[in-house]
Length: 291
Ligand SMILES: Nc1nc2c(ncn2[C@@H]2O[C@H](COP(=O)(O)OP(=O)(O)OP(=O)(O)O)[C@@H](O)[C@H]2O)c(=O)[nH]1
Ligand SMILES: [Mg+2]
Ligand SMILES: [Zn+2]
Image 1: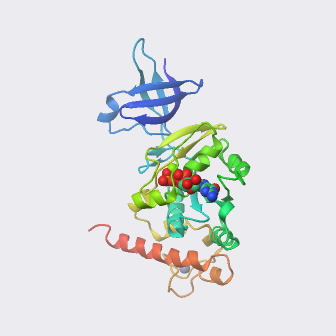
Image 2: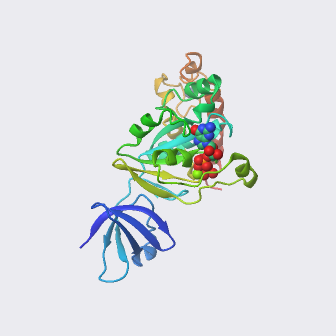
Image 3: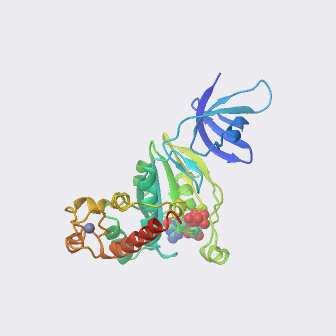
């Protein structure tokens, strides 16, 4: 008999599956997956078969809604893009690129400002101005301010936490799950080592959904986007009137519909500056696509 469930984590050739009946079962994957080039991935809905003796077998991977490669995670609904209100200083370019990565996967991006217990008014205003076109959250893993809104946001969804090292992703998860005790790290120690404290992807069931802590998120590195695909990643652009030229990059073309959004305050000047860099980057990639 096949039972179905959610793949929570994989360690070596063992997989932990939470069945729909609510039991956690350690499984080994059926050998045929490897021949078919399939890798059971955290977030997968899977079918398992218990054995008379020994480990249960993971026998089926249900079709995925989406798949990210680094980190390896499937079927996520939303990407929480965490930045810190103090150290480390926000990398807005990374936020913009993660928004694009999320949109390309069909995942809702949610920019989150953490450490608001340390925030200046200026940083709060910057964050809200840059990302007014998104559903944002402002939280503190230390004082728990904003945690209820975060919990609401997680209910019934599979959510992936992403962002620079030391912004407090694991700390937020620890605040949500008092029994979790994820490893968190001091900032100076991290900067010296230059790498993340969190090293594996693992999913925790939460309020009808699940949350996932990740060490980083870099799938956007590889893709090549057409201009219209990039446009679709900027919700601000949906207010623009049509540009004169199809494929307009909204940089120096005449009669561009996007540039008036700057004066109208719909598009922040800083976000537009970063957009230009990103758009030129994709233009270069398109040029060298077949090299
Ligand atoms: N003041 C303040 N400090 C925080 C908050 N959240 C996290 N920190 C601190 O920030 C540091 C880094 O937190 P982590 O939770 O390890 O950060 P992370 O994003 O999981 O980092 P990686 O696993 O390396 O990617 C720790 O020293 C935390 O105590 C917060 O809301 N306010
Ligand atoms: Mg962490
Ligand atoms: Zn334009």
